[in-house]
Length: 377
Image 1 (tube, rainbow, N blue to C red):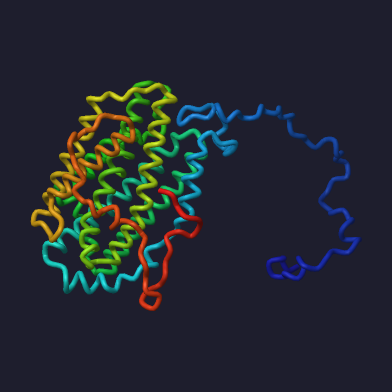
Image 2 (cartoon, rainbow, N blue to C red; image 1 turned 30 degrees about the horizontal axis):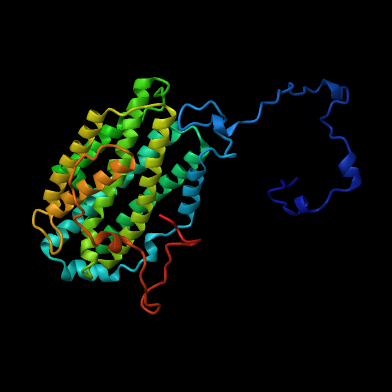
């Protein structure tokens, strides 16, 4: 007899009544129906009280999304999904010409090393969220946004790869710079040290010392790594873009910056809630030391990528802007400013980073960062 894989019509043709009710030969009629085992009685569980949810260490069912306790986390997720884009949406043809024919040696040095740093950093960010942070969150509305965040970090990595590949930069060389250039490696090494402390899935956060360590690690990730280093890391490219150079890459970075601002805002909100729920007080000496270590790494990096300043942007601008942004992040967390007196070095940055601009329909594909309602950020 042909099997049903070879006789698909036999699946589609209804069986006759005699076929439906005939008893197969291999069934023993002596077996009684009541001999079939039945499942044990399962006791019902009480409903979940959303007030029992916590950032970490909750005893509620992690699989039950609503009712929400952290409605703001769900709003972050909804906003993130209004902002889907890919690097293929942006025309990079002019960037190829600019890189080969318009950029100075110093500008190419800046461009290449910014990409070398950022592409490694976004992979590190993706792993930290997915492996160290997300699984320790005990409210699903937090985890769902962080799942989206993991995707966005992967998308950002694709974007840097797309820029590198499109421009025609040697990939083996550019991807290894974070290992062979001490000033780039210094930032990656510090981030690894701060973040790998809590990557252990078995880390017991009911232990107050471990919880304090987790809070400091997440503070570094949200406030320094994403809130300052990423934010500040795009500025050299924006400096080129505002002069009409590498405009495709600049637009890619505008999209990424919108995501990273949301990541930072979410992280700071989580930290504030965590400190409140767990009655944690951060050690001000440890926090100041964190800022100073981050600044030292950023200073070395700035002096390397901008050892020769480019038109409209210098190492001093980059370092000063880091200190200014660091003060802003500390203020958002109601912490002491790490660099009192630091001022805004790039008064053009907010406008340059904005996505508001017109495009010529006949020159480029019209792309809208928003696919839904207007984003508030």
